[in-house]
Length: 223
Image (cartoon, rainbow, N blue to C red; front, side):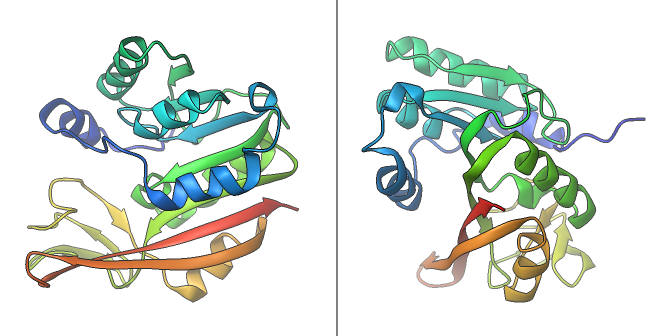
């Protein structure tokens, strides 16, 4: 049986919840710094795990040639409707990020916002190999992923030092498997396939300081 790079639990998440309605500031900053001054219709950008389309909406609105892929039909349906409602366009696909359906060297940039972290380390290596394959020479990869300081509930099933499932409460409750990262694992996973350009951390708390939301923002370049 072929391995798929997403958990079917996300189909239920997208059916039942409003999830990811607006792009994050760090993604906007990445796009603005690297691509705003270029001829935008010529810049091809893919988001893997694009979900309901918040980032797709933003990048399409800014005039780029935008692509998105997600395993959830519901998510792609919501993203497509959002684009129709806003009179925007992007090329959206229901598909598997472990086997990306794009040609070698096709994209100027690939975006990952809390998608790859829903996969095991071995599957993540396969996904990153696919990202490398479809990027143009010196193409850039933006990845936002949860750090080892992320809140993982009062109760959970701990698979390994940084891998969890069945998280009882907090932002990751009901989201299935999640893999956190520390500095060492970033170097091993990303550094093996990319030239890492920057690693930054975003830390906030919610619920009166009881719940930490901690993310790495990793920008890499195809070697």
